[in-house]
View 1 (cartoon, rainbow, N blue to C red):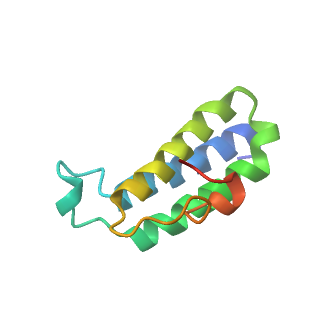
View 2 (tube, rainbow, N blue to C red):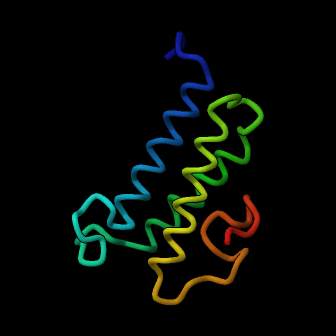
Length: 102
């Protein structure tokens, strides 16, 4: 790992969190609504962790920042759309780090 630039390590961690969150939202299955992998509590935790990582490291990500932030925002919106009782803007997963997502 000593030869891997920090931006790559951070980016890989972000992609892993994004993938895990998408799976917990059920997006790895043909019908997310009936996915046995859907677990919104777990998705909330992963999205919040991703938001913290992105917020804390955005200055180091350079050109990687925009696509990672876009992915985070997409997950936050998907979480709100998936929830039976959506959080108020600013109260959703990771929004304490990113601000409200509409």
